Image (tube, rainbow, N blue to C red; front, side, top):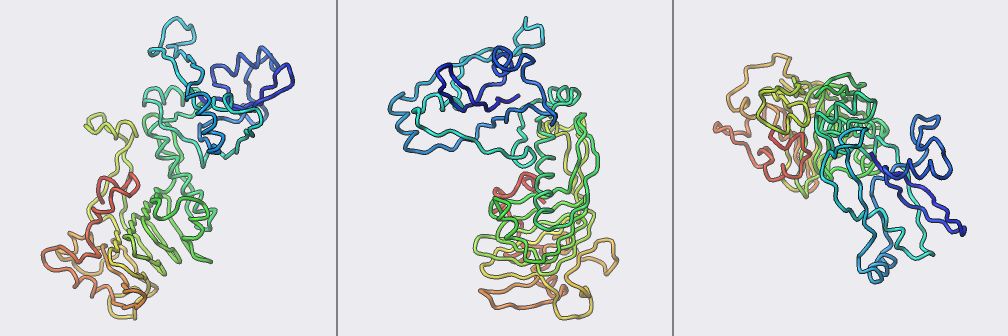
Amino acid sequence: AMGGIAKLTRTDGSSITMNVEYNQLDPLLRATSCPDGDVADHTGFSPFPGNMNSLVLRMSDYMATLERTRGIIAEFVNPKYADSSRNKFKSSTRLECMMQEIPQELPPEAKVGFTMFDTWCSYSPVKNSPAGAVEKFKTGNHPQSGTTGETDLFAANCRILRLAGATIDPPVKRTFNGIDVDLEARVVWSPQWAVSFAGVRARLAPDAKVQITQRSTLVLDGDIILEELTLDGTLIICAAPGSRVTIKLLVVKNEGWELDPASKDDPDPEVHIKGFSIRRPAGATCQLVFEELGEHVVSPAPQRPGMAKHGVTFNEKEPQRERSETEESLAFYRVRSMKSSFGRETEAPLEEFARDFPASGRGPSVARSPLATRARLPRICASGA
């Protein structure tokens, strides 16, 4: 439940725009202008915009209000009942001071308004237990749980990429923790890649060709430009600070990662909260890690035996040659591709990349596992690739 934003008009004609908490909105409407209370309109939703407590304050007004009130505002009680009989509390009741009531403390001349966003790009809280989320799902409400918090993020990111020009397969129906979801490709990125739609647009080159299948997982971290990418599987690209990577032409096809429904025997509480675990088969990840400063370009090298005809291609299903122990330990995919040092490009085919790794299985700095940057990666990558 969430409060509604409304314009309240007093008997003297003065008015205020503010949040009305959800447990107060319905009785307020019934006592004033709407005998039926807070009911859905033709859209299927409440006519009152929902409040998600993302506040933007002008500091001069805010500081003046703090000086006058010393930070003391009206208290509020919101009892949580176990059921509709209201004879038993679900949890202990407490006094609350709600930040969304700050408009009541502002001077009369202060301007108060709101900006309305579509739900898909702005609101999917993780606030309910798996059991509580199922009950909400059964009654037609959004579960607001760990399951939907993750899958809604995938859906939002895929929608943003589509709006930016990428082609992504439609979602498929899956069920986790008893909740039906439309599962999109698992696309996540760090703030170092983009923090807004404009930022995403800037990361896709003009006339970029990005194609992603529904079963794919894509993780982007750092200064990375996509020109032409075809992905059917799992791809992780990490660019350390000071490195700029351009994916000029890259085709990746591998077994990829899979979301498995949570098992009752799984000891990880995070798995039970989300309703799924991530299965990462050996050799099912293409991981490109760039730690050296300067420009890096993933692009076709001069044609030599063993090179892809139309670009750097990774396809685990195509038998090419027996992989060495070193290549297996690196999942065969931690490849330096094309490296440049401050703008000076050097090209090398795939065979030369493999020779850069010594027999110990430890590669050069550009191909190390990104432990140093892993803390900045989205959650899907946090437990290791």
